[in-house]
Image 1: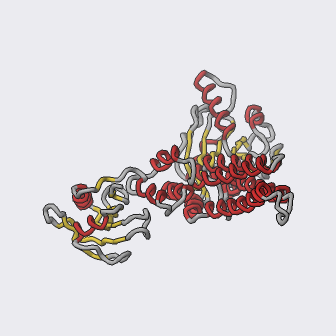
Image 2: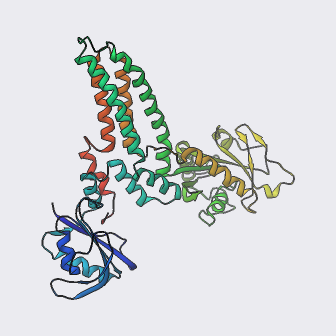
Image 3: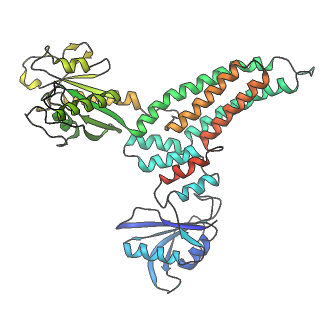
Length: 442
């Protein structure tokens, strides 16, 4: 296998840049550029030179991680050089000139860690999620997966499956032996049902994990000029959407990304709901309703000045579970937040900021309820969910199986589905896709 190298930190001017080398020639490369191989896992100051010209490239820290105790499971060398472009380019060019070395492909370091058994596929995906994490909650979830949170749960399920399969196998192989009690498959059925329920609970919890990974979508609905864009700007703390007294200013969906209490949220400002005045506005209203239909959460905004009389289009669009907001409270005197057909309304003024804190708290509460980080492992990808669905389906068949042989086969299929989740079987077609998500040098 080739020895690979890459810049593992972001490209561009920086205080420090990390260049890694992995493979059987990593030690040779380290000695060629740094003069020798330093003690394992000890940062050592060395003069880094180009072996071809003997030109000094940098004064740098170098580290040596001999196999198998390294990230990739191979010999790994690391150069921590100054982050100027000339220094980085010089070291990379010197490495590329060495025999048997080549530049790494995206995700190739992590792929080697997977192939050497240093990480399973769920831990690999957790690392990818950590690199992409933009909020504290996403980071927390990704770290749990890297640390084997999901892996440990899956291994526990597989251990239970092995015990259940052993009972069924004994029933098949030793049913005529006097010292083996009969009906072992029947004794396994309660355990099969319990395990299926346990997997079902984790599958349901996985909806929260996937929502957190991708972020929640919050659509804002209401009539023209009710203050939807002003609410967006108040929540975003900037002028993200155009605000105008002219009705119908917002004609397309405007999306704003927020970090709400550590959770990723996309707010969608939509066209005002009313009888459209032209074809373009009609299309905007259609898109608004479509966005609202697929949103995880909806803010439905009414005009406090005209309440309880409300525009019919917004009233028809509202439904249970929506957050009802009565905006423009600054123009209404002595008006308390009312009960509505969809729950208690929040009174606020996007203009003055009154009620904004209460709206943010309510939004955060709803977001955490839909995507809060669970203390246990959570399913974070559709691939995980499908593997669990296959395992649950196989367990259901095993529970109902009329013969031990059929029960045993379905238990084997359930175990195979869980192994696929960890990347141990039948995932070759997925690997190129998964590792291509990584940046070069990771």
